[in-house]
Length: 113
Length: 113
Image (cartoon, rainbow over all chains, first blue to last red):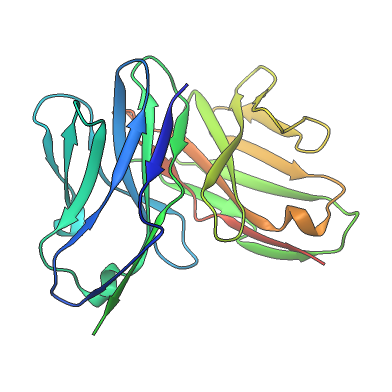
């Protein structure tokens, strides 16, 4: 079975500062990795995904993430955040042979002026 | 990408009643997924719905409480039966995209009083 741990439940930062949201996963088989964002009163939107190939993946809104197989991590980064990035961020994992998506507990990113 | 419409977007219901949530996708999909997001928490998979067969429920969820219909390849319903305040959550419909990512509806925000 797979699992996901998001190491920070809340991350407050100032506008234009860099941010990293941490995600570790556990699985005995190969996985796909995802980051989703949920703005208040909305559904989930895909930020980026790692399927294979380059370990550095770029997503929408200036976000990127790096897959580290040895550390079983998939941390999300943005070099300069905006007020509009305030939202809940979810890391998710899916086995390459399966269809079941497992989510982490979420990280609330709050960008302050 | 898939466009998913969920109805209703929110509802306030009396305990002991039932609510049926509808999910419409703009393309044919094999599997549809139903998630629950309790207040301040992550997403938990309720069940997977395949067209023409009974839904597959995750541990802790039963058909009598969450009956699901899947009459065709673009539509599904989830019913929350005999509701109690503990059922107050966001319920989300999801489908799998071409490249393994998941697409989500806007969610149904249910409050049981």
